Length: 85
Image 1 (spheres, rainbow, N blue to C red):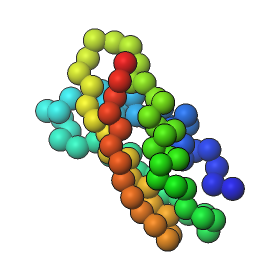
Image 2 (cartoon, rainbow, N blue to C red):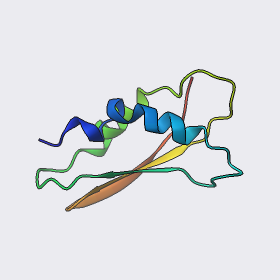
Image 3 (tube, rainbow, N blue to C red):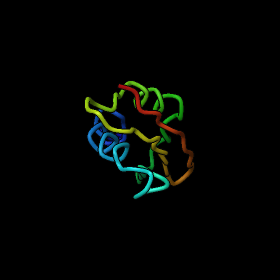
Image 4 (cartoon, rainbow, N blue to C red):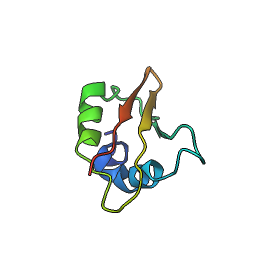
């Protein structure tokens, strides 16, 4: 089993923290997901769908895009998470 820690619901608080970092302090925001399992890699569309359901939270601040990078022993890919509120 891959474990739930790779899916959006488990990383919502990290995404919210990353999207709030101002552009002046970080030009790029990346959430790195390492999957050391020897199981089949998680399909990109399935993982992306789990992150698309996450909102950036309440508050009056500028939200920045976060790049999510998935790395598995047999595959790697990335996609962008655009914050919504």
